[in-house]
Image 1 (spheres, helix red, strand yellow):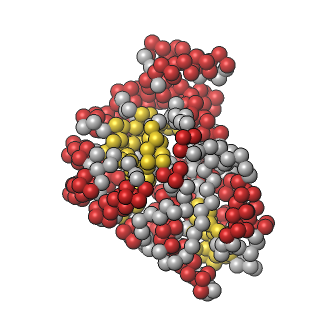
Image 2: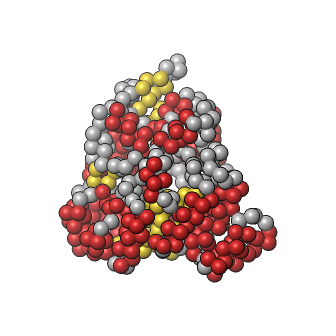
Image 3: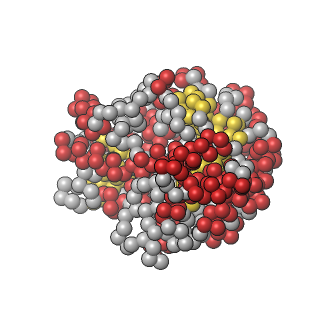
Length: 479
């Protein structure tokens, strides 16, 4: 899919006359990770043949292709959006660039950069970092480069000088989402105008209705990012586009790129008022009426809201359950108020109006044992979502839960938490990593298959050639 984080920033600077080129790393074999294959084996991801839309694995060197692009394009600035799972590869690419084109400044942005600013700015290949939202900061930086003036005082930027001194500017104000132009996809191959939703390929666009999350889940990086803004006295965290502005963007994407399905990426889409949702639902139905997927929380779903989502032609709602046990979700994960009964009722409401549901769930969580994992499984069997996603807990740097684990000695003081599809630290629970991985492979089967088959599924937790064969047979029948 076309990445919305890039198109927002890209469109914002291009409207002021700056030129942008995007280097596409999507299908390079040397970038795709083993974590993807683990997710396929667990049943969370489905394997799809994309060859009919022109997608194939690229066996070239991503570094060499990027260097060739830079040589041909001769940019004045090179940017990387850095997230925990891609930081190592970003570093390798940036090092290759700095070795060959030392005069071109490199800027890092993204959540990882915001949370670990002190560490990242000290890396030899990084010249500038952006903390927090990037649109305003990047435009100011581009304007200064074009005018050949100093950008040392641009809000959100930390700038490394030639003598090693680091200028650390304060965080600036939030952007109004209505100021972001409609996305310009001219830099993207048409194969990216497609995307998979539960095994089916659509002409798909990711769109953003609002920004900011009002919740403080202990495992989420957003908590600390929000605190950085709050400490700077910046208000207005939760913001939405106007219904007219959002619908106009969807109409534009349908007209110009033939979009037939929208993925609304807001983590808490229904934080708006019900009256606001009514206005949006009416406009969307009249002018767009394409199916869409959205993400929200259990406590935001009421019968009236489920009816409005159906009116909008909502196809699927994804909800974070994370773990069974109301007290655990409250005390350890700091989730919004959501009892097991509320979870079951919310999914039943959506199902009543013909809206499919998918749940996100984690295992290998701190202070959870095997029985706790089966509490989650029992809850999902009762709630019966259409789709189930599972991941192994990985503590993200600077989150409240990671800080707690570090304080209590479960994460070493100087240990850097990095990428991977399995836990990067020994979490305080009564399960071995091998048992966690075994449950990861079989979790969705436990949720779907008859209880009478549990002994066979349990045997398949242990990885062996024979068990792999049995596991695949069970998945073919029950998944």
